[in-house]
Length: 161
Image (cartoon, rainbow, N blue to C red; front, top):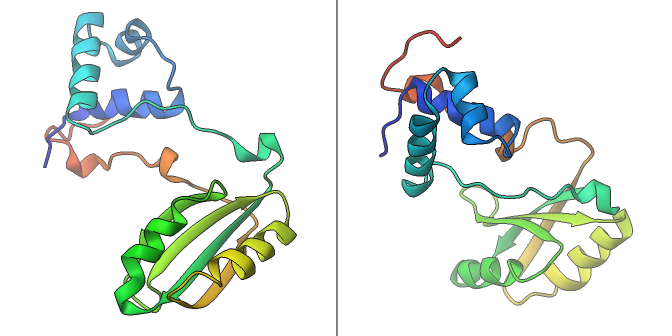
């Protein structure tokens, strides 16, 4: 497990707010030198604590419908079905699950009809899939891109400014 301090957390929090901040802007806002900000940022990326990526806003492209689909799959097909789901462009998330369902899939679509078609004609007809349960997600309040490092992870737990 990688260790970080409160300054690293502040850098990450600033980048969550605006991933385009320059090292000089980060340095000014955190109260460190630009060189230190650049070094710390490089280390955060190198240690795979953060990744800097563009995040697409599907709604701006007309993809207004998000659906979570839980799949019940034959036990010897779970990995194969999950891998198959990753191949579709309308699928934004795939994971194995523990509990009542075996695979969790998130779909991004332009309409409820597109979701219905994909779930019934693609997922439902995938070998090994026994059952699907679909939930339309009307609003996302927090996503992984807004998740911040918990303060208790930091080595130095001084109060943040």
